[in-house]
Image: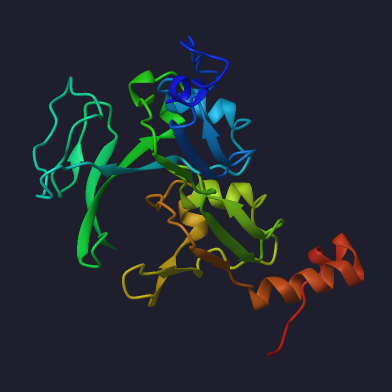
Length: 269
């Protein structure tokens, strides 16, 4: 087409050479807890770890799971099915149920309705892949999946839980994989002198219904190893209540000095 356009009064048989300087069709999207989220155009097919590096690396508050949203191409328009085996790559179709890969990443089929060129509805099909970021960073390179053009990678920030009441450092804390109540209290720098260690409460929200349940826990017994530790979930609220008896005793100690603890006193309520 270029040579034909150049043919004219001065050029009889022009010789045209076209050199490709940049490939712009291979686009990759990464968002979430990375330093430079956005759209990247990279030649070839990068791995997840390489794309994270190109995006400036992970933020300090990155979560433990990366989600890869990938469109499933089906020329016939029919649903594509078939689970992968242990040696399969991520280029083939998957069925709509969750499939566990050898690398412990998972994939789930997703359907989305989009308008066709003639105005009719056509279902675009997607698969959702999950990768354990912590495992990848610890050297489990089976998690380092190959990213395909058009993939959307989302790395959400880490979940949090809350510790409040009679602890030395109350507030929101990052939830790491496998965090327990004992670790949560330790991260909050332990309980105060006024804590009622036998009357702790965990408020836990059901993600399906949004309702909160109340779990009573004996924090002192768990911290001493007398009772089994409890795993902490995202958005848990751990409350360490105040002991009235300890509060009165603490007030007296501050008012009269430590030696007053040796003087027998009768407290009325």
